[in-house]
Image 1 (cartoon, one colour):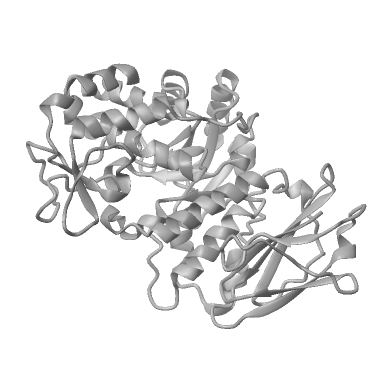
Image 2 (cartoon, helix red, strand yellow):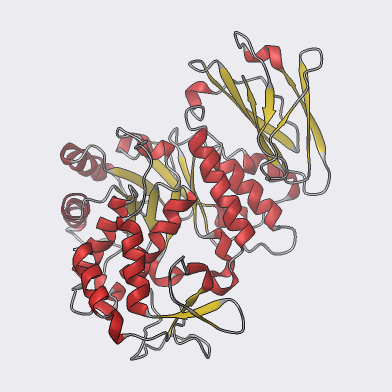
Length: 450
């Protein structure tokens, strides 16, 4: 289906002109563009643009497959959260202010085709999973008029096909809050079978009312898993409800919104927040970063530290919305933050073999009110990864690590991988079996001992 759409778009290139406005950030090499004065937007031929996007997917050079195998793949996932309607809403006319009206020329709403155009960028950043938070209850809302001869279902299947070509897994959202009718559980099972078997998605984030009786859900999950053992269930609930027994019901993760958690956070609660601990669930937490536009005390440095820690905490699954696009305006992309996210994904993939609760060494570091860290030992490589963070937003601090407490057979060097989140690889001297590491305010860093 994706090939058919590419062929149809290609056929119409000669009928198009450079009158379709896109963010300059979305342009790629070889694309004909007409720039405008603000330097943030360009005009392109829409048919040429989307044809080129799909061809980039067909031509994408994938490295050797390192897919997370097994039913617990989500524990190692790095997830990009995308709301097709909201995140890809854009004024393609290139003038005036975008509003909710549908124009006859170029609709401003998000669509599956726009989502397809974004996939190479998401893959380039290093993500391996998409979380589509629209819910996908009404596919017609995401239909693209530029390819109106293709049904919404055709366009959705093309989106899935494009993600598969890039080896991206797909999660979607299923909001079941407020649904209390008699055939509720029958509806849910049919819906889940449709998502897992017909569309072959990889999992679902189920938002439920924590007060309802969830026992019937366990049997449904069991039956779905029987057909598709890799299909993953993520529990989500608003408000305060009991989190005990979530794992027994069959869920593989719990979804939490960092933005909600951080509101009203006091200064002396910083360190405990960054530790991301929730022993009541005993399963990993999928921490989602929404629009982290903090007021007052919170800054981009704080956001960087929160993102950094989510990537290198063994019981945390980072789920990052386009945080380099703060506020949802693609004309104001923060390129520096985009590069930061690429770096985090690269380092996460590079050291994924260390980041496991089973490999974490407890008691090696002593956390303070402002400093904390995690130590992971990989016995196969006879190496250690040390994750350090300074949650103090004003003062720099030092932290000391006893190298002998790591229990390595031998070591040759201690290397620092990040300094102020920049790629400044440096060696750290060992003094009487100890290393001393300076950390600037809101700074996180990685050390390797080999």
